[in-house]
Amino acid sequence: MRWGVVESTRALWFSSTGRSIKEDRGAACFARANLKRVKGGTLRASHTFPGNRYLIELWSPSSVPIDTDSPHDFSGDSVGIFYEDITFRDILFDSSYRGGGIFIIDSVRIRINNCFFLHFSTKGILVQKGHETFISNCFLGQYSTIGGDKGEKYFTGVGIDIESNDNAITDVAIFSAEVGIILRGQANMVTGVHCYNKATGFGGIGILVKVAWISQTRIDNCYMDYTSIVIEDPVQVHVTNGFFLGDGNIVLKAVKGHIHGVNIVNNMFNGNPQYHTPIVRVDGSFWSIEQVVIERNNAVGMDLKSTVGTAVIKGNGTMWVADFSPILLFPDRIRHIQYSLFIDGLPKFTSHAITNVSNNVVLVETDKIVSGKFHPIASLDFRIVKT
Image (tube, one colour):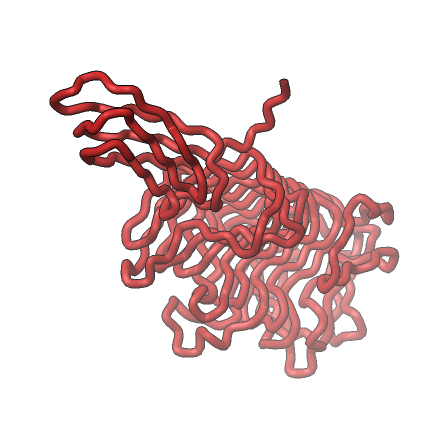
């Protein structure tokens, strides 16, 4: 179906038969539309559009929306799937600061491609339950800006909110919103996304992963432009090949205090050296930590954090101290140490051993006074070894 510019006073909703599109008590009505492909045109909210609705809603009368303010258990969903194989392409969704762009619930294999979402007050795209909604090549913003907007601190709303499993967000730019993307479901993938929606310094978040304990989320090759990624109790999450600009970083937030199976590798960070912003920060306290790997990242103007630390210490004496506190992410959790001691001059041979490991500080002592270099490697090895 195609249309030109449509000014909508009410939300457009699709019947669950997949055969018609109707307008919910509004001025325009599209009948007998082919819902397999909806493309080409503009949907613009009028001044009377309800602020709690969306310009297009794939919403069956049998579906029950999720309360986003409370945790949701997707395992209890048994209503069913009412929409399948629908494509939205080349559409401008202008919400006129009233409501959101598109709402999809209990649907499967939905594609949103090459669309523009503007002036939403709530959310540009909201997906609840169902799975396999693919969002690609889209632009989303509450305000039309190219960054550095004077009103950036007042941005509200969410670009994309996914409360569903097995979805993909690919090649998307979010240029103004308080939160760029919220992921509340499992096994979702975010690739090639550019978030400059609201700087972290103003309270904004680029990507927020809110599925505590069961995240199973992949975030790859994304550009976090003055924005951060916040992950709550991450379980099986990886953040790879990203670029973080303007002190944007990764925050691991403890809710229930469990973190398991996290890979944060091969990312680049750039920030202001005056702020000493860590590339990865822990918010709260984790009591259970297993299989966490933070390595092979690089930073300019920001403080590196890792689960592996190396050092080279020159000295002369019987005590050799390496403090890994500035580099290791978690306090007092060194589980594995490997070191070498290179001795200059005489005596060439001396006994040496690790005598203390505490507060991320490693102490090696020798039985003779020697001059040389101490090369320790310390890692936070969280693997459980059964004997």
